[in-house]
Amino acid sequence: MTPEGALGEPQIIRIPANTFECPLHLMLNLLMHEMIHVSQKTKEKMIEDKNEREWQAYYEMLFHKKFPQIPELHDFNKRFFAKKALE
Image 1 (cartoon, rainbow, N blue to C red):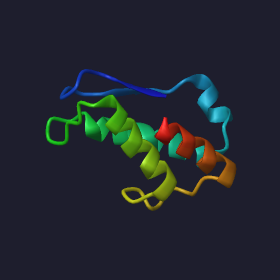
Image 2: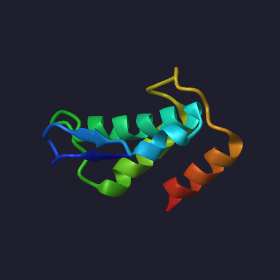
Image 3: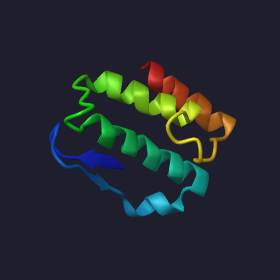
Image 4: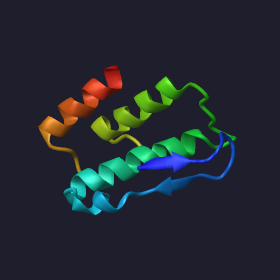
């Protein structure tokens, strides 16, 4: 999944067809990750640094502070996304 659109402009999230082959809890977390990016690209909350945007989106996938209703990931997924956050 990827959000498309310039900073401060409306965003479109492109969802590939194979997304729905993933387990539901993983698909919801990936969608949440992209929704964090959409909010980061608004004029009010704009974060220009891509590394900071990724860090915040992966943090949300691990700790669910903004979206507590999203189911938690399995431990192996958490390790994978934690490593991605540190890269």
